[in-house]
Length: 179
Image (cartoon, rainbow, N blue to C red; front, side, top):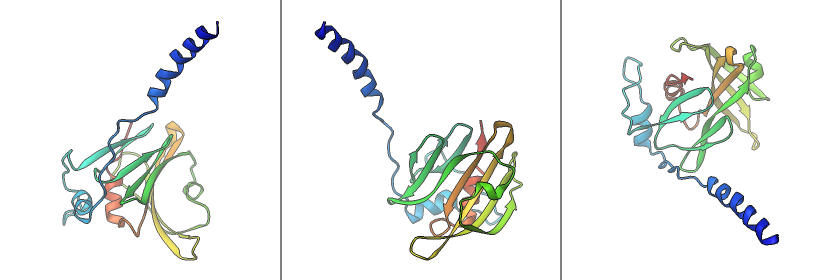
């Protein structure tokens, strides 16, 4: 009886143990050259055409974005973070929906600029804010809020402006597609 129980347990547990491994390749670190190539705007303010070899798709429950392939991505449930050279530069978080943009932003932050992004087919806002850091300095961030009231969700695409400039962040934001 004990032997039969062990066989049943191993039959159930061994396949489950195999499910936890990942064959996903980690992206190469961002270099200045690849960051410029992936996100630089043309003189007319439009994002240059990107080949599939320079960009990678990021898919969450209700949104798809194109990001530079050289960024490493760490996925959570309905969120993700972006890193270059092991340093966190931003992320994308699924949030509960609210009509108030201010309620979707991080606590203890001051809004510097807020504007609607008109280039997308769904309600999107760009918010630049300032936050106090633990070392007493002020950090500036850009938060692009994708509002999806019909799905009762909002997405917050955010970047540290010391790591990525506003124009590059907006170019990435404009690659968004809703599922």
